[in-house]
Amino acid sequence: MMISIDLDNKNEEVVYKAFSVDGNESEALNDSYLELYELIGRDAMLKLFKYFRGDKIDCPMRLYRPDFIADLVKQTTDRRERAKIARAGGYTIKFIEGVLGKRRKENESEE
Image (cartoon, rainbow, N blue to C red; front, side, top):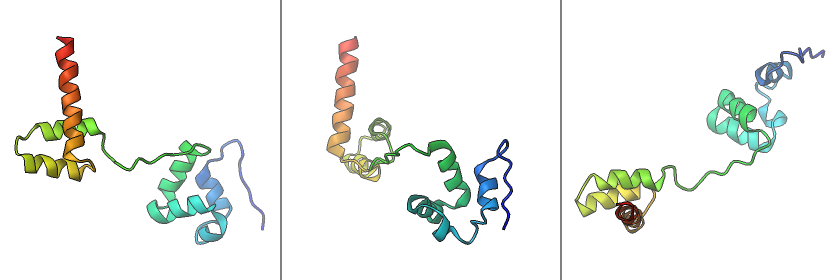
């Protein structure tokens, strides 16, 4: 089998097709990329490869920033609702109230 790749205009999709990877992912892809392929699909996996290859990606335990959750919590006075919002964001209400308290102290010291 002859593989023809224009090295001046190559991109990972062209190489993927030239190497006949479709249907042979489990044999062709490194384990990490195979797992990404199975999780998010070919196009997203190739995009991650293109932009982050060689980098170590750290995926935090929480999707949302504590400041963002604190802003949401601040919008309600009902303690149970505040706790639900904090838990949905992956935090405890005590931690989020600490963020709000720290922010309040910083604002007071600026005045």
